[in-house]
Length: 128
Image 1 (cartoon, one colour):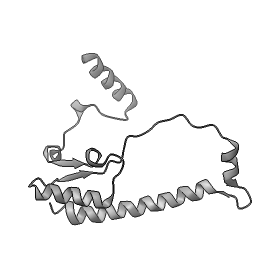
Image 2: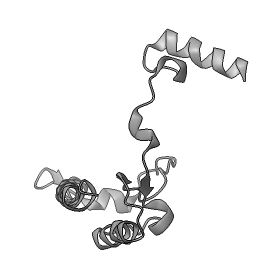
Image 3: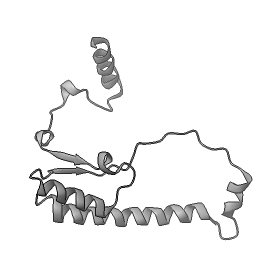
Image 4: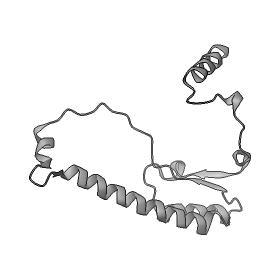
């Protein structure tokens, strides 16, 4: 374990991009009860499920001070090679690909979802 600790310390010192645990102060909220949605829903997280989960914990006498919305593991896969289907998705006549439009719509939906989660957090969790 010493080798690993020394190695991480050397990399942290060289890159200046992170600090090792011995250089950090653990925040006090680490000792508070929290709930992560992964164990309850895996990748099927919904606003209704989160509300019901927090409500259930509160009714059981264990209100969470923190809720972590976790809809799954990060997936890292090799980039797919372009195919004729990918090229056909782009419409050069309007100068914008269908993929970029889809990305913007998805981004908008995510922003709306984030706002809803923020409102639900303030309404149900912070009061717990």
